[in-house]
Length: 187
Image 1 (tube, rainbow, N blue to C red):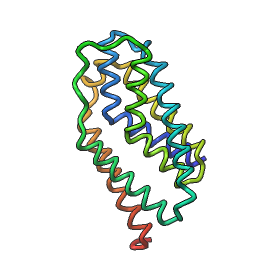
Image 2: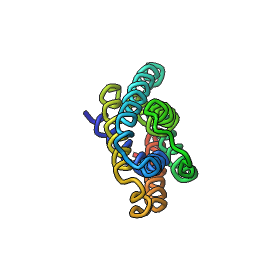
Image 3: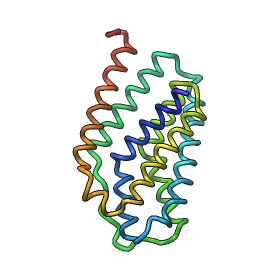
């Protein structure tokens, strides 16, 4: 069960602070309603999390305990860099109202984003792929749903840059501690 909760918390926090959250909020504002975004959001996070968990489980057989911990440290470090350096793109000028197009864009964003990598890494590290996948999907989906429901209010009410930098710092520190533990330097 730790895989579920770890994936849930990490994916929720990273998605809440990430570029996808802002993009979904801007898209909901441009479209005028979050209702058309909910199904594509959840279908994309379910598919991306399932694929990431499956890939993480497939990779688990080729790594031992210390290598798994170093891989987790690397992924947390890369996630912190992604959060700190990559900024959301501007709001769409002419957003599509096609659920299929929204699903494809959202699926591509989920597969190429930090949450899929985190979900796969948690599946690899804990050897509980389906719990990690379920937690990742639930965390990411809930955060994106919040962004869609908030719309334009998201950027007005949330100090996004402060949240992003704070989470990036926490993830970077966690990556350093995990790497030092895996190498036997501390602990």
